[in-house]
Every structure is written in C-alpha cells, then in structure tokens.
Length: 246
Image: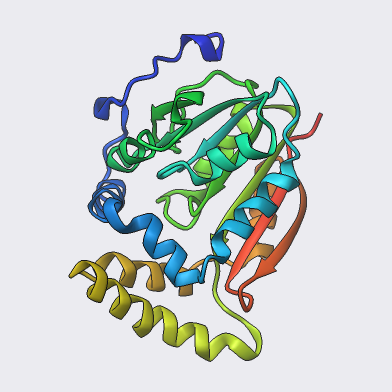
C-alpha cells in the first residue's frame, strides 16, 4: 500500500491478528458494547469527556490533517477531534468490531473512516498520519513495545502522538482508588449489566499497569521524542504525549 487511499474501509474480522490475549480482550469489549459509554460516564462522573478534550488539544489538529484514533471503541476521541477541528480526515480503528458498529450509529459518524485493525500490525503505509491518538490502548495490548513501534511507523516525521489511560494510583488517594478498582466498579457493573468480569479486568489491569513516566521512557526507547504528561482523577488517569523526530 502506498497511501491511505489504498486501505479498504471494511469491518472485516479476517484482517485481525489472532492471539489468545487479543481474542479475550476483543470478546470482552464487544460483550460490554451496549453499556460501555454509559459506564464510562458513571465511573468517572462525566470527567472522561474532559480528559478526551485535553488530549485532543495537546495534538492541536490542523486543517487538512489526517488523524488516526486507534482503539477507538465507539469513537469518543474521533468525534472530539471533529468537534475541535472539522476540516480534518479522521480514521477510527479498533479490533472490537461491535463497538465500532455502535459508534457508526452516532450522529456525524459518516464523517469518520471506520476500520477494523490490530494495533500490533497496522494496515497503513509508513509516514502517513499527522497525529495518532488512543484511549485505553496501551494498557490492553499484549505487546506494548510493538504497538508503540507501529504507531511511530505510521506517523509522519514531526507528527504527534497522545495517549489516555488509567494508571496505578499514587499519593493520598491510592487506597480510595484501590477500593474502587477492586470492589466499587465491579459492583456497579454487576448492578447495571449483570456481569462484572470486564470491569474486574479494568481494575486489575489498571493496578498492574506502567506509570506514565515508564511509558514515556518506552516511547523514547522506540524512537519518539517524548513530550510530557498530565495526571487526572486523583492520579489514577494520565494523558501522555510525544512526537516523532522530524
């Protein structure tokens, strides 16, 4: 493939890399699709919207740019990009096909290019995006280093990357966040959905995840010029950003 124009826009499961961890994560997210957005609002008291706004402001989308929202889910970040800058080409990729199908029902979804893809093997040529963004991707991939290298590969020289994710809590609120991850969130999920497994995974993966400083070191190690971080929500959520060298 020589350009973005050669990528077929088709939700095709056969495009996706088969691995046990990936299959489990994909099945988990597809299963919670009907309640995913509502649970995000409830768990964060609506603060997740402000985190996404902050992330998009950090990449500062410019008219005419091509931007990839990787692990798009139902498209919250992709829609936020269009809200902040309408004159861009937004690509939304994920391997949780059911979540993208739900996102395609949202208003203005036709303005986004939806694509089923695996973050470990992106179906794009080198140097083709002005920015790549992701929400809750790096915590869920089996091979974080490989995903980081793939993101670097598809970015143009000088292009930007930003990631939003939960993180192991620190400071005075650490016990509160621990209790929320272990008990409160799974209980809320059970009350709302009748199942708590996916949100127990959320807590476990958050508490066992890397810190933002470790993630920035990893980005530097694969070739990024790391930019910085901003923590939110009692130091349990962070946005990090970096740039591909010019």
